[in-house]
Image 1: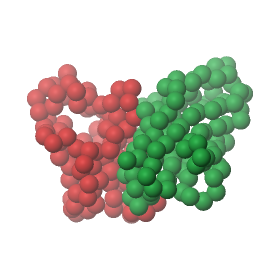
Image 2: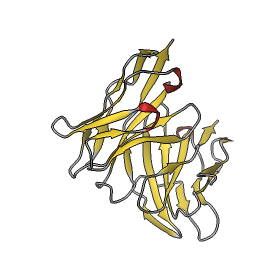
Image 3: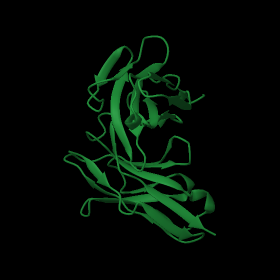
Image 4: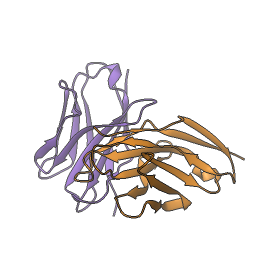
Length: 112
Length: 115
């Protein structure tokens, strides 16, 4: 079992570009969570998705950020028109529903 | 609302010494509590969790934590530190008593182990 996969591991974007982060959950897991870790801070919840549904997006910024988890393929976190404040590590975690989260290695986004 | 506070953003111990990382929580429902470890440039790995069973929870790598309701604490301990324990440690509480996996994290404690 390959665990939770995230790609890319490192992503560099210039201000105004789009960032697209991908997360493939563990086999058999249908629940995906996205967290953001800013420098010197803990992880902050962003969004919780199940296949084709957003269950809880209370941690998502109101603008520029969106997430999806299609029936086929990975979950995608999309950040449009990135700004320097978006620079952070973005972690995906999955679970089968009940049971603990399994975290991916993260994507480190740098906005120049 | 649930929250966790980790006292001490940096802790340094000598190899072989006791490790004590502090975590206090606030929860309006019986809490589910977690400790995670993060090695540099890696994701989070679950060390242990408390889910309302035994108050003393044993985890991986020799770590354990004790749930103390009267003190609203869930401190992480290890009797003898090893160099490989150097990492960042995060305490977390489940937002709604374990009904989902939405976790509220503390700001982390960076553990340094001196030879």
